[in-house]
Image (cartoon, rainbow, N blue to C red; front, side):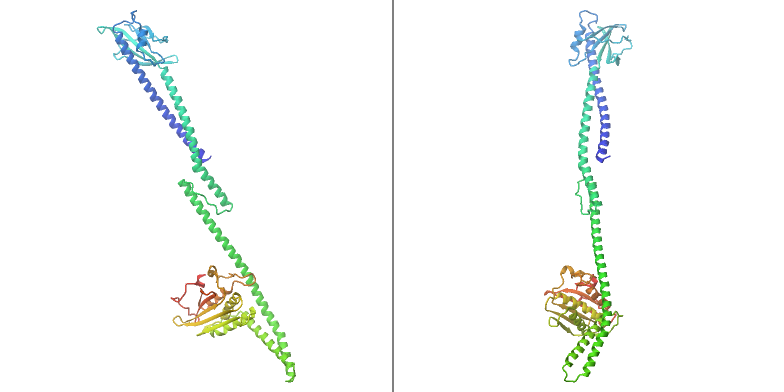
Length: 503
């Protein structure tokens, strides 16, 4: 059963019971009022007639009691009163009625001795009709008893009045109930049914996956609290769904990155094996060339070609050794070193990798002090990743500036790495150290370069952060302790820009 129908039935029952009680009380009150009026009329008529009959006997022909009764009876009565006379013995001797035929009244005798001066009142019925009767004694001159007079008033008018009042009250009650019922249904529909329907539709939309749906307040305090809670639940579900989608996307990207990293690792292992395989025939070529060169005279024109073959073979062998050293996974070995060597080695590898020349990409070194204890292979890997990013970001000619200065108070070296590239957009700076995060096309980058750089710095108990420069380009500030296990303390020199700890 709907709420509006239930409320209507409850209120209808309440109104019906209240109306019945109120109607009953009102009808009884009206009946008492009408009966009191009838008593007053009967008493007034009885006193008037007893005063007249004091000087006339009812049996006197000169007395027209019907006319006398018509003169004193109220003009507005639709049922005229009747008179009945009793002699000195208490026997009825006649009936009078003004402008009507006397109704048959029950015959009875009265005891005049027991009749009080104020008379006797009673209600009685004759057939289906009801009457009110007042019997008063009649005394003559000298206060001699003459008999008694009974005034009889029919109660038909009272019954008709009460019936008309009851009908009007019932009609009013029905009209009031219907009107209140319609009003209750409209109010319930506006205040309860429609908001509930909106709640149901919103719940269906939430169940269907539309978490963006919201419900407007209805103006009803209790329903608005429910609507507010439902909107808050929808907002929380939407936020959780957004976080879950973001998590799934990041997980998917991470899985793709891991697969790509595994592919690169496989390619690295394959390249290492191929480098070993290339080294054997290369040594054969170099050895045969040296043998042929030793057989030629100094003036032979073929010596220059053989010398070129030997030099290029040595260059290829050196390059293979560099690649093997770079790709070989060895345990970290911390030893005193100069930063100039891993920087220049990384620069040479990047020139070969990107097919650029030294005149196009210029490396400027400003090393006030470059001695520290560290892992030379890891530091070379660090600068390779930084330089590769710069090489790929710089279109055409450009400059890479690496400045190393000592910080005596913190007992560490500060490495400032800058390039003349386009820089990093502000909205991406908070994610540059995240694994597998890259803005390059598929196949051009793994998103692990700066992540590896940050991990190498962390392995050396250092710190790294990114700074934006007014003239553009990228700037990285790296703090490395001079000795392993000595972490540079944080102080006023530390810039609040993006660091690995901010990830």
